[in-house]
Length: 322
Ligand SMILES: Cc1cc2nc3c(=O)[nH]c(=O)nc-3n(C[C@H](O)[C@H](O)[C@H](O)COP(=O)(O)OP(=O)(O)OC[C@H]3O[C@@H](n4cnc5c(N)ncnc54)[C@H](O)[C@@H]3O)c2cc1C
Image (cartoon, rainbow, N blue to C red; front, side, top):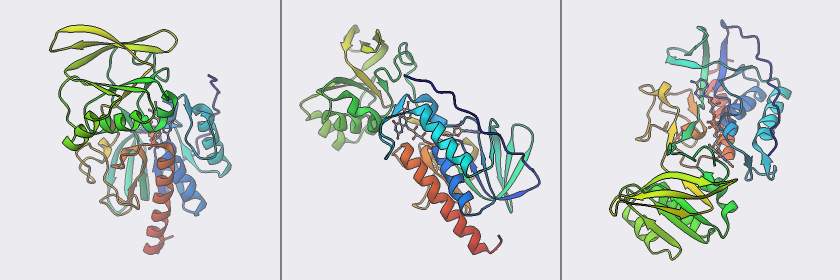
């Protein structure tokens, strides 16, 4: 795999006295595309965040972004960044947002001690897949270990894959994978937490094997993963399950803490949005993996960022202050 050096865009000289029309928080696909759309609409725009590319930095290659074919994730970041630079979208990078307060304007506190002010705000701080935290998990990341069935299932055509987890997302993953892989083995440390209908559906699939009350101990392999060591809590025995891959489907951690108490979140602490990416506060939008959209994908995050920017433009136009 190639590792291309991404030229960091120059951070704009920021006038902290300015009132922005639109600030996009988050340098992942959602924030970047939101800022791009807002800038093209003529809004006084700023893109703010820490690491350029967001979760793309943890990805090897991407195979499902229309028009780009199979692309190395670092090249994808480079392409997104070049587009942002070409449209001269002002950007403040390598800062962490520490607070968000809503008065007449949104006031955004930064870890450099400064405060930004804006009429509308796009919150796109993404999230991260929950990890098992066992030996071999990071060693074989993208070498058999995956956190995204939608992204990676086709790479396991006619192979044997494990699924870690026992909730609805794990069982939905098993149903999807049963159509592609030759065999799917679900390993879960306790009993299923998924809906009964989904459990019944999975139990009837001929190429799905279920190991409940079974703890994953280690993912093993050489160049790529070759299996996982597990411990059966009932028989108190350890064994090795040989497999070509494992999908870890044990949840997603949204970076929504800065909105807690400010907007409505769901039980999973994801930001609730409507189909225009509006949160429960007028002028405050959320897009991408931090929202309650269960489909966490680059193309979805970018499109949601665009929707948010367009709706923010209408919001500003209707208020009449340009
Ligand atoms: C291993 C892996 C492989 C994947 N493969 C694919 C794939 O093949 N295809 C696909 O479509 N999707 C894939 N995804 C999912 C995809 O990466 C996400 O859906 C997408 O990145 C979400 O974009 P986002 O902009 O919502 O958030 P993110 O990409 O998570 O970006 C959020 C940004 O906000 C920043 N941030 C958070 N908190 C703060 C703060 N307080 N201050 C400043 N900045 C902050 C973060 O540093 C980050 O830059 C994969 C994900 C992973 C983890």
